[in-house]
Image 1: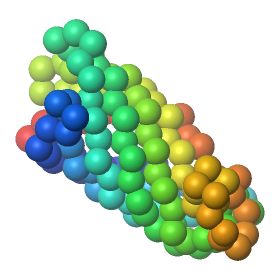
Image 2: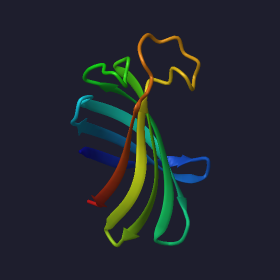
Image 3: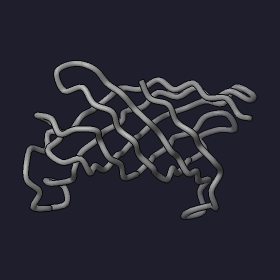
Image 4: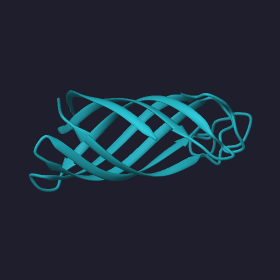
Length: 124
């Protein structure tokens, strides 16, 4: 379960941009809770369709076999469509401590967690 709040941000690289604050919880053997803050860029594909990329930082409640540190990076890639005041998107969200990708010397594993996400949003 992911719950997010997005707010318009100034354009970045001449693209629509949003600030995003999210809280997530997942169950299973590597259950966890995550809080993250990120910046989203959107590319319009048509008046209603878009592609979005979010990069953020966050923290998880506990370390697991997949997340060796509580500090995490969060990446989400999504395709979406606006329906009036509603927004529907499908995407992939990844949490990782960046150990391998950034060449950092963290202790613990860096398998990360990946989620296929379906998001329904409403503008207020």
